[in-house]
Length: 257
Image (cartoon, rainbow, N blue to C red; front, top):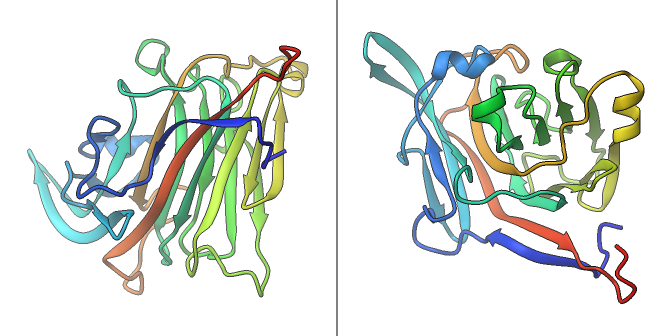
């Protein structure tokens, strides 16, 4: 299923250039009232992200930034493909290594491209992976939509066991396979979470995942879910992204997918 040869690569960033490709990505800047999650970081325009040895590095730092009359004690980066690339259905994956430390909250996720018109959560949110820095063995995949958002999002999780390397000591591939009827989450080649359209609708809720979505990568500091950094949290903290790839299913000779 994950390795199906009919998956055709339609978009990717291998991060092989000298700097971030701004034809593919743009920056979210600021704090935006904690981005709705009580986060502490200030997102900069490029100062906390760069390309190194064929990888994107997103670095969270403990440093002071002033924005008007507000002061922030941490900086980081959030990038997105909004206005540059969107996708409806497919296999979307990234190879990532996460930082370890309480209060660190890296994520690889998607929002509906109608976000600015209908708002959240009506636009839909697909969290391909979220990671809580204090637990290096567990990763989460979550779906948010109208009536099932925030702490009521439909969440699955995967927990690694030794001798498999944890999420902070080695890279892992995090992805979804998404079509008209379901979204399937996997880590490496292991499926661990499935949400179907019929299950959502059987609850009397709306399935809002039949439109275009854009991709987001970020490293948040603090927030209601991960908690907040302590004096023991190591800074600077780096999230490494080897690639982001988007595939779509080729039709077979009969015209069926």
